[in-house]
Length: 221
Image (cartoon, rainbow, N blue to C red; front, side):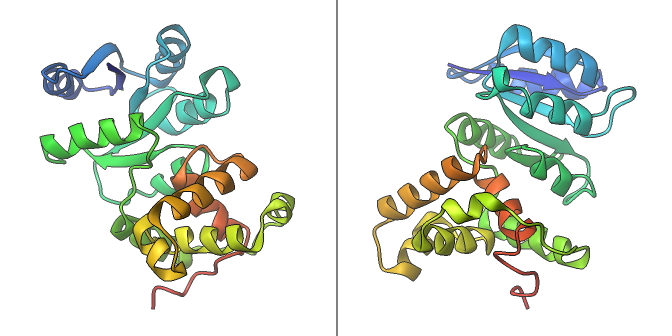
């Protein structure tokens, strides 16, 4: 059973998501919060598998709440999915940088919401290659000087190569095809790279690839 905490300052939104998710045999909504402070408290109390987190709320907003949750070792297994009104909200990239596992637009189709919750609970990032490419294009417009990341020195040449391909938005299957290896091998390389860099998931690996300068903006052209 996948447990979910819904965080949104609008009762109608919370109610709609709860009704939809609770109707699934393998998903249970275990709590609701209308602001970030309460979300952090409930995260500690309930340890849900997935938190659906509204990005804009009065008081402690979703970004700050996400930062507190993803930086807490006791909540390592809790995955945060950002809820936003607009596709590629200005805060989405920052949320991914601090550890969110992906994002959903509130107007998403019900089936997509359910699929997303299940995917994140299973350890996947809620970032399709297409979405990753759009995020990278947006990031490229505000790119800063790459930060030195000593952890990159722990990666093998193949792992650095795989990380760069993840940063370009390729799926495991596409990476496997590019490198002439099996999808299982590609997945193993991605997993080992995340462990070495302390990345919570694939979404954060994409961000690290760009912040470290391993991949530079501009490839999308």
